[in-house]
Length: 275
Image 1: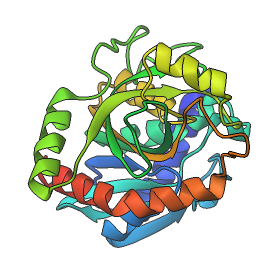
Image 2: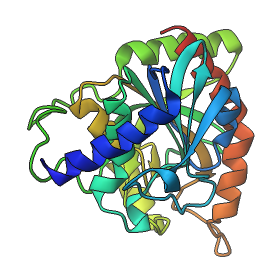
Image 3: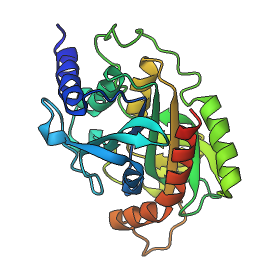
């Protein structure tokens, strides 16, 4: 058997034993500083990544490194309390391993979130943006021999983010009085923040926010035809007209994400209830 598939099966079997009869319907991936959503999980079973055979460990700021399995919005969910990033030095095979494992466990939907810089001049710190599309400047996680049991060699990416889920989220946000943006997520490798000229380039080619994650997981889910809903929290204004003493700070990003996490949590929970 393909060693990549062996690793997926080994990890999925371990988690399945920990959660017993629970069958996750929704997979949720939490981004930097967005751990508040973990509080929405009722009676969670906590599975540290370090205990899962062959599993990578998250080292990024604000990422605890656990799976949580329990009820969210009346559905059984499996939540990644911290993701794996390419910039941590892991190959894409391991960056996307958690998503493959959630697919193997039977999820029907994937919800992704991230902290992102707002390159769109209309975006301010604390804004929530529904991801309607993305631009990928990260290595494609499907490079290499295709894993036929998960999906086709050339998956369609015409609608990477599910239009039905987007429409529902907009209705929910309106009913809660939460303003939303809707735009394009640009994904680079990191770990450096972009230069002012790079921010300008991202804006010119159509990006509204920029980050260092999310897209590999979305591609992997779409490979298996799993509908995806994505949301970015704007944690800094990523413009190219800074004052001379301006500096991007990782701790400030976490604080900004934490401040907006409650609104994002409300939308996610209501959206999951609607499934």
